[in-house]
Amino acid sequence: MSFKRKTSLGNQVRSENKTPCALLDCSAMSAKSAISKEIFAPLDERMLGAVQVKRRTKKKIPFLATGGQGEYLTYICLSVTNKKPTQASITKVKQFEGSTSFVRRSQWMLEQLRQVNGIDPNRDSAEFDLLFENAFDQWVASTASEKCTFFQILHHTCQRYLTDRKPEFINCQSKIMGVPANRMSGMHHPLKCDGFQLFRESGSAQFLQRLVTVTVFYLLAKCSVEDPHLP
Image 1 (cartoon, rainbow, N blue to C red):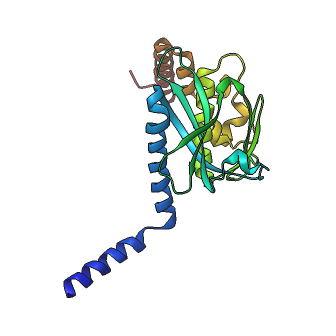
Image 2: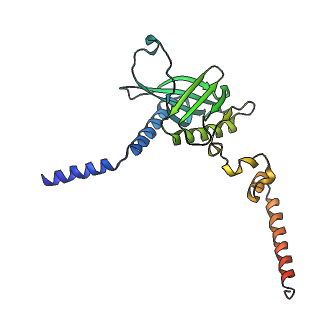
Image 3: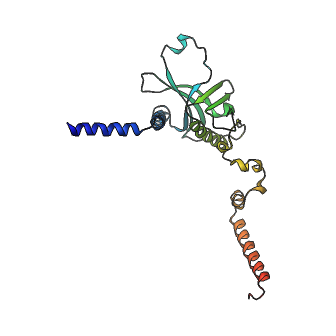
């Protein structure tokens, strides 16, 4: 009996060590993995990211329109097709109370996304807005970090797959755009970048070779001036 009580106490301690945030993260990861397998994999699509959200403002929807299915969880998912040419889309997925499965609701092609509003560029905020050609939603993510991760993936996907008309990202923190805050003012001026970025953007190994050669000659000339006895 004493052994059982000790084991029970040990399980209780381990359970208490799991913080609510850790449990929430595990639950969210499990849900997103299930969404990827249930919703997107059967259609030969790959889910790039998802964020659990709630509406900031309640929509007045008739009871018959909802089917009386009660409470639910909502996820905004970003996915791409495996088949070429690649098409990206944003899908609203719901999980109703008492159900272990997920249901695909609204869906938009990425080209229909017109504006992404981060609400506040000066602080971490879980709130954001998405403006499409025919819809506008105001959301709050489960956490600010989850929103930030989703925004980074969304911004990268827009840059990669959209060529003609890309959505406008407003009121977003610099880390979401992939640019450090102290570099924002120079992001449109390549000459203000450091040497490595210049080499990376030029994409030429000859540039690096010339840079090394000039540096070596400069150091040799400087040494000969400071010490004339050098050979």
